[in-house]
Image (cartoon, rainbow, N blue to C red; front, top):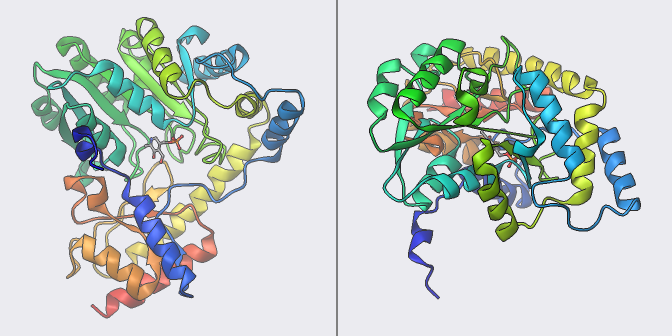
Length: 387
Ligand SMILES: Cc1ncc(COP(=O)(O)O)c(C=O)c1O
């Protein structure tokens, strides 16, 4: 049975492939340190779980409105109005099973074949995959180490054409941990107005921030009618498996996105949505504790990597990844990632898994215990000395 032609354009997220390979090695008895997967290693805070148990007992086990329970849409709008400093209304919020559908739906709904979509490179691989899937032309916007993985304005200007329909940005960023600054966002906003394109602002790591303050492009004048704001629960509340995220859409786009929900998922799981209200309205101490722990791990990871000859690692401001430069080492980053898994039992990703501008880098997720991170770095060092 042959796939439809469009399937040849759909990519994947190689973190899942590397994770599966690492698991196979583990099943053969190998000891593996997992630094590949982007999921917090903490359990979901118990009050959130309890809210879900109670919701199940209370009968929240059926369909909900496709855009989400009104109480949850209100809680999200309230949370965003405070955290983004701009009025967000519940009728513009669409609740989705995880944040990924917001990427998929936005591209499906807004982009025609032949349109151009600018996306960050290195960046979350799903952007490029779905851009290709919908038949658009992906235009990479290079993120450069010399500006802490932000972009050069000339690169942004060069990426724009009269076919640009959408620009995707992600801050704090996967895979580099980099953070866009207010002037970066101001430049994008100005160009979006001038060239009339939409912005998909992926803010899934907005709460995992160690330095500076999260700024959203939606705060900039006139940007509410051009911005799709993506955020969710997976990273902030250690809820990757619950599948709960949301998009905030310009009002005129909401109906189409809800139709995509009806055609694909019907709705997001009802008791998960109730748990989502508890997450946003309950104590946020759990988030602060997780972020403090991530910060300790970040510091140890950066320090450990920079002590290895041939590796240079910036200290990122957010998310839970580092993106060390390994271009001085004698192995290509793809081979280095394979070597470190097979020889040293350290599972991590090559920078090229995130695009052509990831060449010469590795991505390390420090969503693992400090002890495992330190062991991982010891193993990397020992293996690299042998090269
Ligand atoms: C940048 C970015 N956006 C979106 C997502 C998707 O999150 P979710 O698990 O809520 O679908 C991820 C998950 O890895 C991510 O790194």
